[in-house]
Image (cartoon, rainbow, N blue to C red; front, top):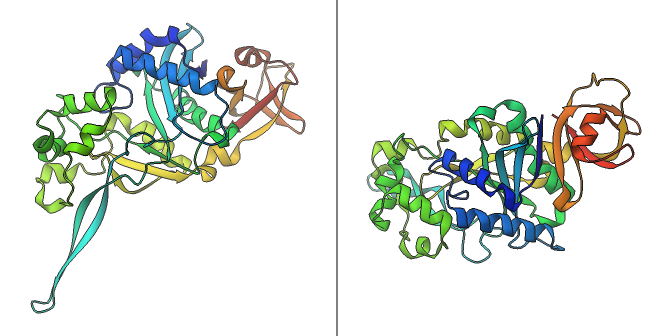
Length: 337
C-alpha cells in the first residue's frame, strides 16, 4: 500500500537517494543536499502560509511504501514560475522565406527563445524508485498533485504545465545540447543541467542566443530529439497526456524535451474529483480503486484503495481510514483511479 504526504526534513536522506537514482535531465530535482533541504523548507513554509493568489510558493510530496515505511518516490508543484527570473523555453514556430521572382515559398521551422510560461503553475520532479514503478504507485503520485490543486485552486494558476525529460544517452550526453547550448555555455550537458538545478537562472539569460535558431541548420541527431521524451519518462508522460495535457510547440532549452500544458480545470482528475464524507465498510471492499485524500495542507494525505461510492459519501475499509488518519464522518476527496 502507498501513501502520499508532504515532505519533511526527516525525508532528506531518502530524497538524496532518489535524486541520485534519477540521474541527469531532471533539473528541478538536483542531487544536491543543500538544494533539496531548501526545497523541503520552501514546501513547509508554503503549506503554513495563507495564500489568496499564487506566488513563489512550492510544494514537495513524498510517496511512502506503508508496508516498510520507506520513501520510494517524490513529486512537486511550483505555484508560479518566473517570479524572480524569467522561465525560458524554446517555442517552435515557422519562418517564411519567399521569392516571387523564383517562385519559391519555404516555411522553415525555427526555435525562438521565450518566457511564455512565466507566471504559470508547473508540475515538477516526479521520481519513483525503480522497484516501485508500477501503475498504481506512478498514478497515485502523479495524480495526488492534481487532487491538491483541486482542493486549493486559489494557490495555482488557471493554466498548468510540465516539462518532460528529453533524450540523452547512457553517458549523459545530449545531442541537442552538443549541437547548440554547448557553443554558448562552454560546458558539457551534465554541468549545465546541474547548475540549472542548484543556482539562479541569470546565467541562462546572459548566455543564450537571442536570435531564432533555424532547425535545419542543426545536425540531424539534434533535430531528431526535438520534442522527444526520454524512454525512462514515458510512463509518467503517458499519465499526464491521458489526463488531458497537450504538446503545444514548446521544448526545453537544454535537452529539447517537450513541454506539455492544459487548462487546470479541464484535467480529468480535477474535473471528476468529488468531496464528501468517509463511510465505514463492515466487510472487505469489492468496489473499484479510488484515489482518496484527506487532511488540510501540511496534514494532506492521499492513498489508492478499493472503495464503494454511496449516496452519503465514499465507503472505505477501516485500514484505509487508518492510513489517512481519519474516521467515519471525516471529510474526504476522491476520484476513481
